[in-house]
Every structure is written in structure tokens, then in C-alpha cells.
Image 1: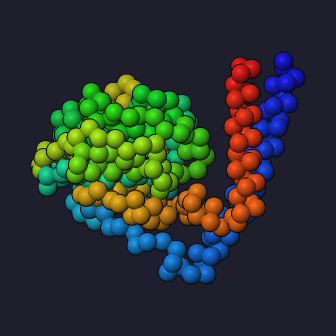
Image 2: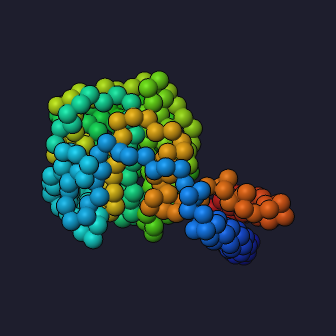
Amino acid sequence: EAGKLAAAKEALKGTEDKLAAIDNEMRKKVLEARKAAPEKAQPEVPKPFAQWEFEGNLRDSLGKLHGEASGGARVENGALVVNGSDGFVRTAPIDKDVTEKTLEAWVLLNGLDQRGGALISLQTTNGTNFDGIVYGERTARAWMSGSETFKRSAVHGGPAEGEADKKPVHIAIVYHADGSITRYRNGVPYDKTYKTGLAKFNKGSSQFIFGMRHGTAAGKARMLAARILRAQFYDRALPPAAVAASAGVESNFISDEQLLVALGADRREERTRLKAQADKLRGEIKSYN
């Protein structure tokens, strides 16, 4: 059995290498086309209500929602560094009521197996009620919309995160006026949209926090260990094209749809066959474990 397992692992690596070669070739093609016609490359990038770029400080570069560091949180080389134990940042209170909204951030995680920390949350200043981009709380390696007693966290699955410790990923959550919530990773929907209702965050008694799920002091199982490269807040629900455009600002993101258009029929067929083969091999490997 050990020999069969080793052979399956080797076959999987070969298949994944072939897939990566096809995808890289197509990515190059799409990016070259974008460079040649930049005006067609992306829809207009949406303008946030608040933006934290972490370039030497914790200031909101568009408004007054400046941050204050707590514990070991620090700004370093264009990123907010949070340590997973006592480091987080909270902002001044927001001067407007918030219902529908979009939260987004670009992040490099310090390890994929941490549970329950958040990139950015909008919370009441007493730290009780919140909506936030939370990592791995209910499902390991999954991005979810965190909320008090999981009130707005009905669905918490999605593809397992496998890259955010090696390269930055863009995560966004859109809270729509009808109470539905859509999560995105690198500009494309992450699992399905669901509906739980909308929380209202009141003017003067709500603020943003980074690196901690919610609360007023560091607490066990609420902290994130990561480099947060940028965070943004919109006082509106962004449509899918705007989320994709924003993701592209930092990531040169290319959707599967764009890749498939660039491929052509023969390569598309080959890619589909290789993906099916990889899935089959993963199933085989799982059966040996």
C-alpha cells in the first residue's frame, strides 16, 4: 500500500505541474493583453469610504477613522503586523450609521492553521456586536463572516485556504441591503451567498478593529497572526465587478472565466481532463490515509 500511495502522490504532483504550466501560460497571455490595452483591462476601481494603507502609520487616508495600536501591533514595511497574542488596532468611532457595507483587506497569514482571528471587523465600541472577515473560526482554513453568536455567519465553508501564508490574498465580504451576505477571495465569490439579515452599527458608537475578531482587550482564540497590507471599508454593497476591480489593484487577479477564454478549445479540454485526473488522484490518496 505504501508503494501505491507514493505512486499516487507522484502522479498527482505531475498532474498539478501540468495544470500549473497551462495556467501560467494563459495568465501571461492575459496580462500581456491587459498591458497592450490597459483601458480594457479592468472596470473602474471603486472608491472606499475609509482606507488604511499602513504606509508608516495607522491613518485612514480618506477620512478620520485613524487607528490606535494595542499590544504588539506595529506598522512595518507597508503592512500592519499583528502577532496572534496581544496585537490589534482599533479606530476612532465612525460618524455615520452603517447598515449595508463592504469590508475588504489584503493579507499574508503567519501560518494557515490558526483559528478565529479577524482581518477587519466593524464592531460596537463595547466590543460586543460585530461583522468581520474572520479566518478559520468554525471551519479550519476557511474565510467566514464573523458575527456575535454567529448571528450572521450561517455559512462558514468555502475552499480551504492554501496560499495566504506564501502570497497576499484579497478577501472581501459584501453585506447587502436585503440581508444577504457574499464572500469573495481574490475577486471571485467564495462559496455561496446566504441571507441572515443585516445589523445596524450606530454613528458614534461603532468602530473598526484589525487583527482581533471583536472586543476591547486581547482575548484567547480571537487574535490573528498576519501582515495586513491594506484594509478598506465601503458604506455600500459593492457589485461583483467592483470587487473584482478592487482585487485587481493589488493582485493582477485573473478569473477562471478569463483564463478559459484565453485557452482555446483544445487546451480547455486538456485542462478539464487534468483537473478531473487530479481530483481522482486526491481521492485515491485520501483513501490510503
